[in-house]
Length: 104
Image (cartoon, rainbow, N blue to C red):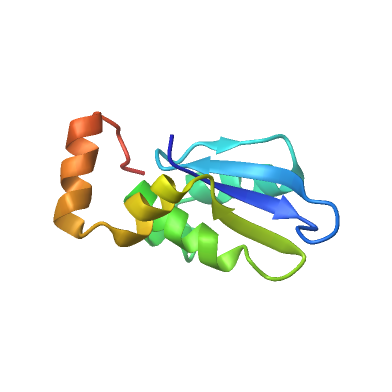
């Protein structure tokens, strides 16, 4: 599974508040998770509605949900490699080979 995990209070007492998969699923029952679910399903969201693939979504979440009190990071080095390091062609091959539906 390729995921970004969002933590609250990452330095003192880390608490996982949401996970987002490359398929665009949000896992968690916190207000952060609920907010992300609403944003992903909202065609009028000024930022997220522009993304068409889970890779773009995970890049956005990893960067924008890291602000000190909240920290987002990939669940593994392999997830980070898939999202950040693969060329577009290699990523398309990876999606095809895994059979995942990463379209949002």
